Picture (cartoon, helix red, strand yellow):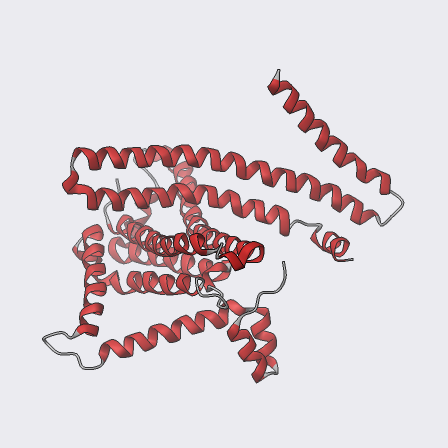
Length: 231
Length: 122
């Protein structure tokens, strides 16, 4: 597989020195900074000129954030409202990162396992923090099950299940984005002049949104499971 | 008759392919062992993806059937049913994606990837 041409990496080549070697070694970090820049610009845009009667830009952001908040509280209940910021951040960040992959010459940061594993570990740690915050030391009861003499076995199974969550969250996103990149690259190489990648780009748009949504929805459900009482 | 013929031909092709590396035994031995490993890995990757896609296709067919029946029975709930169906499809598709990741690891990132890439680059 030949080395792909990436715009930001070429830009860092112009700067030269240590930045260039870093950019060649880990382009996904450079592109995650780019996604962060886009989101910060959007945030600053949304803040400008907030009024009671919303204008077009403010309307758009209100629809997005308000809809997400309603959807989250629908699933987690009222006490889940204070965890809405991290969930919405995950969704919007992953969505923007995935969309970067559809532009030729840009690399989606989520096509690298490190980005996804970082986000999955954050969700994992947050689940346990929420559990301890809500239930105190009785949080361990969620891992033991109803019969007391089976509890070591059930504890082990629950531990494995929880670790599998981290793996499944990260690898699902990584596999989808990497697979899309590979297919787009191969189709482009084979028949780029005949617009062969075009159907894959349309499917790619759907996949970007659905994968970000599934990551967000699964994180919300894990938070809900940590919030509720033990069975 | 057809099943026996195709299975035996596949098996013998694979066996011959794996054996033909012995003919180059005079050269660098790591490359030969690596090539044998690579042959088996690529074979396994292709079959793995095939079986995974087969199972996931059936599973997703069931999911979409359930969704369509729900919409046909109650067209007003089509929004909720569609959203739930899409979420279920993404989760089932993830199983095929896990197999795809294993297949990619087998083809590109197996222990003998260094000598193999040197072999193909030269």
